Amino acid sequence: MGRSKTISDRAVLDRLLAALETVAPDALTFSKASHAVGLSGATLVQRFGTREGMIEAVLLHAWDRIDALTARADAEAPVSPAGAISMLIRLMPGDAVEYAFADGLLLLREDLRNPSLRARGCAWGVYLAQALGGRLTKNAILAERMGWQMASIWQGALIWSAFKRDSDPAAEIEAVLEDWCRSIGAF
Figure 1: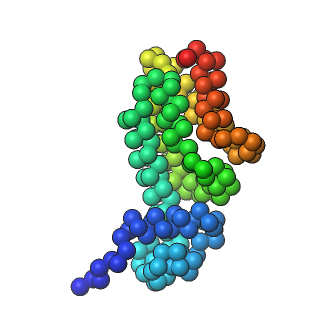
Figure 2: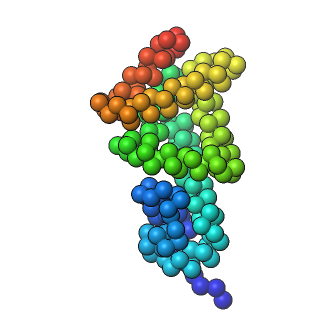
Figure 3: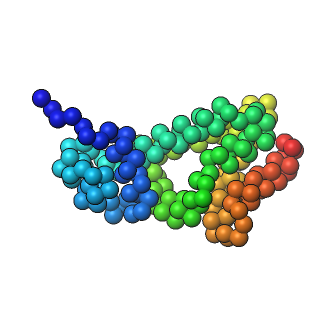
């Protein structure tokens, strides 16, 4: 008879994700993970097989969380340019802008190197662009292009806000997105 899990897989993944926010993926060993989670290294090896398998599982879990947040934001935002902006503001990392572009870039590097993680990121981008574009225009051909443009403007604004740190990131990014919407005639 197998042993029952004292900590659920979801709780383990949540704790490991928090650990990845403090150390780079390359630095997360089974020993460090064991301390973060409260399980032995051997137990983690049983759950994940390899350190790379553990990192991939944690980052796939992060994508699950992003997908769920995006779907909620999509379901709740009005179908309008203002709704598209509110979706993106809701998807921002809150007061963690500094984290999102310092340590977060290390996580993104893993997403780009790993085919499974890269596929998740691509699928999220497609969903996001469709959700945004459908709020900007009824023209299906233009909607896809405009959705990708808006997502790109948003990501660029997030990066520059993290560099500048001279104002409230949400307000600054909202203003950039509103200005872009005016420039394309969506407002």
